[in-house]
Length: 74
Image (cartoon, rainbow, N blue to C red; front, side, top):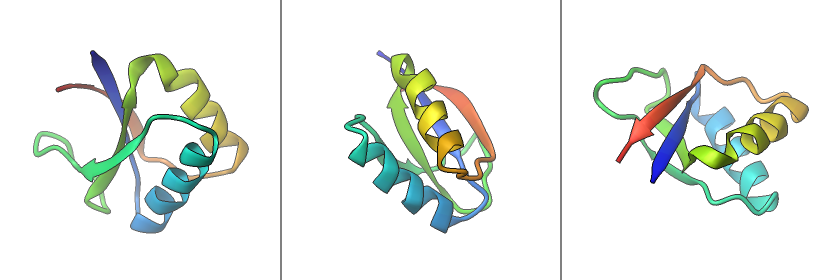
């Protein structure tokens, strides 16, 4: 299965995103940022690639600041 990750500038945005996306019924998980990527806060959200449109919509609608959304192969 293909996954994407959302990178954040700080932990508060990551935690807010986790809460919003779980409330929306999405299958997401907080994980450490992979070594090959860099992010300011050290954690990122992992989610199935097919949920990208919904994840992006929820985060933008709630004005959550993100650093990037990147593909991730597990």
